[in-house]
Length: 181
Image (cartoon, rainbow, N blue to C red; front, top):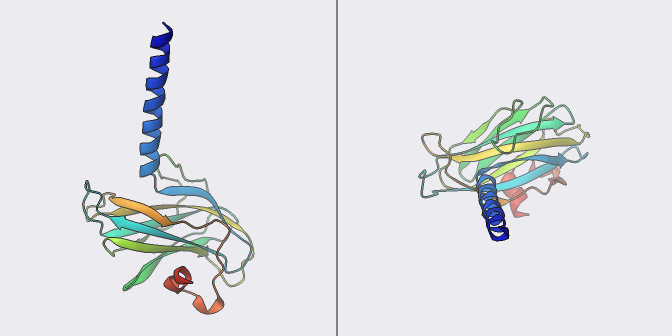
């Protein structure tokens, strides 16, 4: 009797751990990051898009911000060398992202950069970076997609630290400069 109960508990535990790992590896979203009170506070992320062996080659990276506290907005800029950067923003405080499905009722506008496989930079900053000294709490959804819009290999290479990167005044819009400093 004890062996069968122990076996059932161990089997169930193993399945739960395995399914939890799978869900986490497919979720490319987060909540609860904070941009500090500095007017030019920013967080920088680097995401690698690659052929995952299942859904083929990536053609683009999409990123959607989700402002949850602090008012007046956050903006994401997606960039890759030799491609024009694109932006998306969220100006309305709303509910946090549902991590299990990477969805949310109050996601901001999407930034989509068609740049194939490779590393992409995502800069998250305040929508009004000149005078806004209010801390912002945000989340973000990001995915690498193939030509059919199906998610393919996506890995966060460098994550924003949540404390806020403060770029020098003359580096505004130069995401590569920020990564390489």
